Length: 196
Image 1 (tube, rainbow, N blue to C red):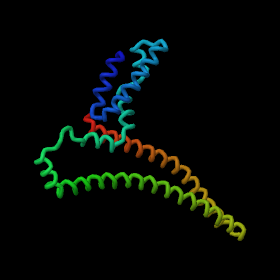
Image 2 (image 1 turned 120 degrees about the horizontal axis):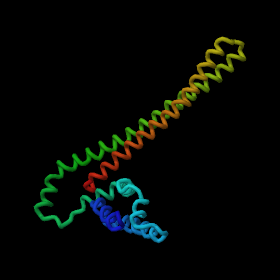
Image 3 (image 1 turned 60 degrees about the vertical axis):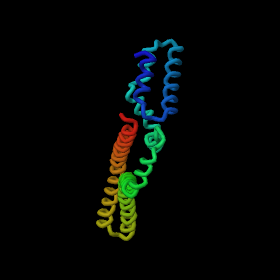
Image 4 (image 1 turned 30 degrees about the vertical axis):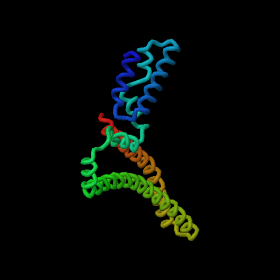
């Protein structure tokens, strides 16, 4: 694929984004290709060195904010006629609550995801603190001369500390997975607004 073909495909795939973002992206990749050609690459090699066009489009899409996409999508392409304004005003008791419900539902899901992540780390912290407290109690039992209860409580403390370390790494993986899924969902929502 040469430079013009790449830029044409890129422009077509970015339709639906604000025009200034499309032009900024086209200019950026045009300059990248030109720089690589100046360094001795052919146009095809320079385009191939940029990577997969789907990944480039996903990267550009992830950098554009959702409110900006919504604003671009709902911006009227022409002036509203009087009857359209009347319908919007008369339909407001219906569409405003529906819009508010959708926005609040999305916000509730977003907050729920972060609540799950915070809860996971709170559980991990509580297990770690429990383990440290058990070790402290075991030391107190040792000084009190109670060897068998000291061993039991010390063992329980070590188990809790070890479990908290393992859970920390497991919760990191779960958090990365949740964030990856939420990023893909956000990209999907953005894709709906640009018509992909």
